[in-house]
Image 1 (cartoon, rainbow, N blue to C red):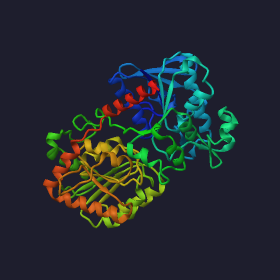
Image 2: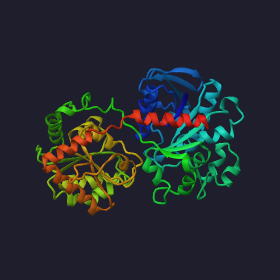
Image 3: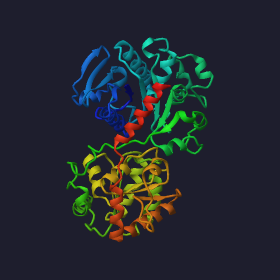
Amino acid sequence: MKIAMCSSEIVPFAKTGGLGDVCGALPLALERIGVEAVLFLPKYRSIEDKGNAVEKVSSDVSKTTIGKNIDVYFIDNEKYFYRDGLYGDNNGDFHDNLERFSFFCLKILETIKNLNIDIDVIHCHDWQTALIPVYLKERFGQCEIFKDIKTIQTIHNLAFQGIFDRRDFPKLGLRNELFDHGLFEFYGSVNLLKGAIYYADQVTTVSKQYAKEIKTREFGFGLEHLLLSKGEKLIGILNGLDYEIWDPQKDDLINVKYSNENIDSDKIDNKEWLQKEVGFKCSNEVPVFGLVGRLSHQKGIDLLTQALDELMTLDIQVVIQGVGEERYYEKLSRFVERYPQKIAACFEFNEHLAHQIYAGSDMFLMPSIYEPCGLSQLIAFRYATVPIVYKTGGFIDTVIPHDNKEGKGNGFIFDKYDRNSFVEIIKVASEVYKDKQRFHKLVEQAISVCFSWNKSAEEYKTLYESLKVD
C-alpha cells in the first residue's frame, strides 16, 4: 500500500506549528509498520536556504529522501513559494494564497500522473491541500492512474478553512455551478475546506473528542451541519508524539538529562537551572508552572491574563514562552514588571528554553478554549510535568483528572471556562504539590502513559486499508 501525504509544511523542511510536526512524524511511523509513503510539499525558499540536498525530477519538481526510503517531492514555483513566510508576512496573509495553493494541489496530481507514481490513497492536510479531492474528481477523473485512488481530508483546526473572496473562484478553474450549488459557497465567500469535505472519501480530525465537537454549533465554525452529514465518514485519530525527539534521556537541549528512575534529583536540577535563568529565587518548595505555545485567544491567553493578579497571591512561579499577537506581549510584560520574582516571559521562540521549560516545570498550563488535539500535554507527560487543561478536545482523550480519593489521574482539568474555575484548579494543584507523596504518585502516573506515533499509525493503516476495500 502506498500513501501520498500532501501538506503545506513538513518537518524537517518547513514548519509554522503542529501541522509540520504531524506530517513529518506520521510518514516515518507508517514506514516502520510497512506502509509506504511519498510526500508532497511546496519548495519554499527556506528549504534551499537550509542546504537540503535535492535532485531535479522535472523543470518544477525536485526530490529528496527521508527515513529509510520515503521520497519527498517539492513543487517548485519561484513566483509563489520563494518568499520569507509560508502563508504571510508582517502585513498579514499573502493576497494570492488561493492561487498559490490551488497551483500546489494541481501540480501534485500532475506529478503523480507524469511520473506514473502508483498511489492507493492521497492523504490531504488542512485547507492548503483541500482542492486535491476536488481536482481529482473534477479534472483527473478520466485518467486511468487515478480511477482507484481514494482521498482523505484531515482537519487539524477547523478555525482555518481557506476562505476567499467569491470573485476569486474562477481562478480555481472549476465549473461555476460548484459554487452556485453550495459546494464551495460559504456566506458569500469561497470555502476551500468545505469543498474538500464534500469531495473526500473520508474526513478525519486529530482526536476522537474533536471529531464529536466539530459537529456542534459551538465548535463547527459554520460547517457543523455538513460535518454531521458525513456520518461514519468523519472519524478522529489522535495525533502521536515523536518519542525520539522528545526524550529527556537523550535531550541535549536540557540542563540535565534524566530517566524515569532518577526524576526526583535530576528534575530538581533542571528546575533550579530554569529558576536561575529567568531570575527567580531557587526553591523546590515553590511549584513552577510553565507555558509554551502560541499567544492567542484560542490558547487561553485572555483567561490567563484575567487570572494572573489573583494567581500571583499564591506561592507559585510562572514561566511563559510564546509568540503571537502584539497585545499579549504588552499585557504579559506589565505582569512581569509588577511581579518580577513570580512571573517571567519570553516573546520569541527559543528551542533551548522551550525544552528546559518542559523539563524544569512542575506543572504545565494549557488553558485553551478549544484544542483539536494538543501536543504540549503529551510532551509534558514525557518530561514528568503535570498538565493543567480545560475539558475540551484532545485534552479529554489524553488527560485523566486527578482524583485524590481513588488515587487516579495524570493531570488537572477544569470543567467551566471562566477565571474562577481556572484559579481554583491552580489552587488545587498547588495544594497537591505541597503533599510530596501525592504529587510524586501523580507524576508517576503522568509518565506511565504512552502516546507515541505507533498506535496512531496503526489506526491510519486500518483506515487506508478500509478505503481500498470500499
